[in-house]
Image (cartoon, rainbow, N blue to C red; front, side):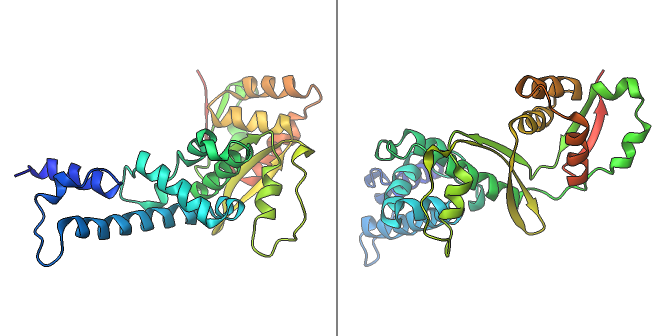
Length: 257
């Protein structure tokens, strides 16, 4: 007789296509073979997890065809079962899986499209946080401005890609014009965030992307600005800072010691 922990481990392995014999020994037949009972539950688990991945990565599903997506999802979930009960949290490593998945080796842009979709899903499920009132910066002394650090809205994330993943994503949407995307048209720097009840993306200039990502990592305004100026010596910090304050992407600030 297996302990409860051993039985849970055995059933978990059986649900993901592993050996069913250990779990089957402690399951009553009751008119249906234990192996058959486990297969019913295994089918339900695979179907549920595949549907969860498809809901998070619909563009990937459309780009590769549902049958291929099901094959990739089946391979993924066996190696990366859920670590928690919330299905919308499942799939954070799926883009990295696709990057290493041999059947996708000719679709080099696919992992970054998946990263974009994950960022959009994460934005939708991020906690609500009140934005910072820009007027509160008026009390910061001029000498302290370079040492400012900011906390960014938790729904905001950034993605840089050598591929036009925003165009690829839009072309994959239902009802989109059937126009080819020029994969050689260059990369993109994207900001993803929630606006109301939807996730949105916007393309940024390289220097703006550098500034925003540096601030999101907790760098001071001085260091973030230096990084942006390395990208574009003509970068306009005043305009960039006003744009971020107008967009209310900051939730708080502090002066670094």
